[in-house]
Length: 257
Length: 286
Image (cartoon, rainbow over the protein chains, first blue to last red):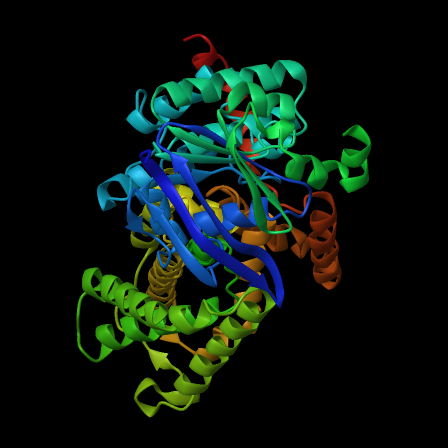
């Protein structure tokens, strides 16, 4: 059995009687680039919310590195090595780009001494210069002091990814990171993520852009109506009849066959 | 300085300090309409320690601050269970309860008021005010300040990034209480007389107004708001009958023109940019 960093075991979640995640199990191999795909409403974002601790789960278990994190409160999970971005940008609108990135460092700076040390006053402050470097590496060096609400969408989207990377996560979960980005921005995002992957970060990506998924990810999990319908290498997903049916409808598959 | 202006500067110091007491919870997203209640506790505590216990001011003021902070800490737990407009009402109710208690306490002179022995001149009040301002400016520049602003913007996401949101809000509320206690002590030692009638809803409302119209995004907002609203009525004295009308119109105009407050993040950033082009180029040049 491969070494899995994140293990989702028979997890179910109901929202007022509607079963949005139905006994879903999958493993994310350490260092892999796993994609979580499926039609709209399949439960992908809910799976992210369950892993990051936004909602408690009704049934099943979530293991991170073999440790049961099912009952851990959300703010403890980032310490365990889970970090995420959001489908709808959820940067802090009144904070500047660099401050948002520094918020991403919070999990590594929770000692009282770090909490009560001024950021960005003294030149060469470790946290501030690390955040500035991270922005520069992502090609966003032009905007550090700008309040994010004033920045263009594509830039905000990438700041979210940079922020999520700042906690040195084991598993980086990205919810539609490429949505709304133009071709150039998508390319830059892919370089950024490949860089993180080379450093050993496991990627778990929800994405609709299949070309992006195919070029970035090596492993795919497909959900439909809260159930897992496929899991395997990304080269095989477009040949799986169940997946084709879920995306195109059964008649279309019948016609093609 | 004439006695008239000394009096105005003393009031200004009091207003600035109390504005910062409301600013700290507001920066973390908590609206406090109960400033008067905390100020009253600070004023009576320092007054009592000065008149009845006979302590010197360098003791009465810090003890009053800590006592008020302790009360703020204790009530922060039930208070922070409420949100938005309900929190405004809860803090207002707290201030009313405090007023109701002091007006009935004979040891503090009940409704007749309570005399305070030691007198603080501007040379004590002004440095204290400056220390409070510097403290808050410093605090907002730390990672704790960043956490407060993150909680203000999006509590859920702050929590997902590891911020202890509950502790952050409790700390902001408690520190606000400490500063309100200092404000109350300033009042007690400046006027040498504490009357609960002064610490009413009008005081709480005006102070919250200083903060909201000054702006909650930066630690300079409350300073600008308090200075503006303390001095404006003095300049409006020329047309005494109409000054409250003009005052009200100005408040409404401000809310229309600058709903996020006079001083915003973007404004401060632009202001810095005028003098030294930090950030933008500094990082790009690497």
